[in-house]
Image (tube, rainbow, N blue to C red; front, side, top):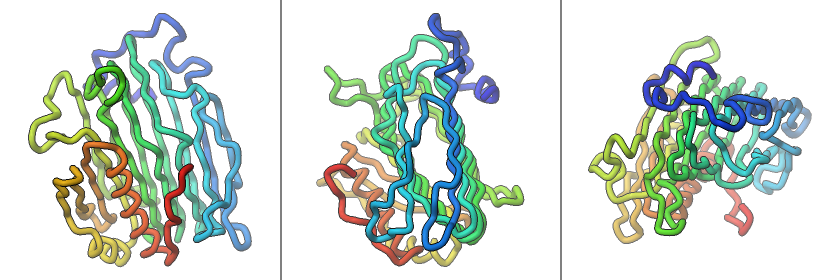
Length: 304
């Protein structure tokens, strides 16, 4: 976590909170999930957790893939606070499958000191399959948040990784769109032997750079960034089914591009509201699952 201190976008936020110091007990969360194939299904074989991150158990509610463990990550504090340091490790053994999401949107609370940070390490063995689809991130006014995700993916494995970023609490009082201080996210993909595939980083500083300019957010308020690391034949099949679309009537735009080094695809969505953006991500997820596993995504329910 000390590496975050050297990020230029965080140099102005190194002061310590007047309450609990950054990374103190209760603010230094850890979660490790290890999945293994056993018999006719995958199980959550290894679980290590430290508050405020929590996982209770794996559930098997997906009728299309009854062997797929579905895991909800829970933040017991209800939001991410200043000085929080979260560390998440996800490991899928060969032939394992898993679906991971969150119990609700990730809220980044307002801050008057320091920042919050999260690191993620995701490792997929041979022929593993992961759907990592958290609910949206909602930064409150004056929030500062930095994330670093490293994905070690075997050439035969598939990882679907999604980030949905809200502009803020759009309908809170008179609105808090783009009133946070900084959001920084880095995702690095590589092979198990360390061969680098790609690194993508975006830094959003609404008080420094106008996010409403063309080529950034423009008139849109919600942004989804979805990474698909998968073998080339799967990437080709998915890409052929995902045209670039600008829907002015429903106020969203979406399209896919190829990642370098035959790593897979990146799918991006912009929208005015979260619902159409989440719907486009769900459509992309449906295409990926059908292409890779032959199974369908279940119809959207009231609870998921």
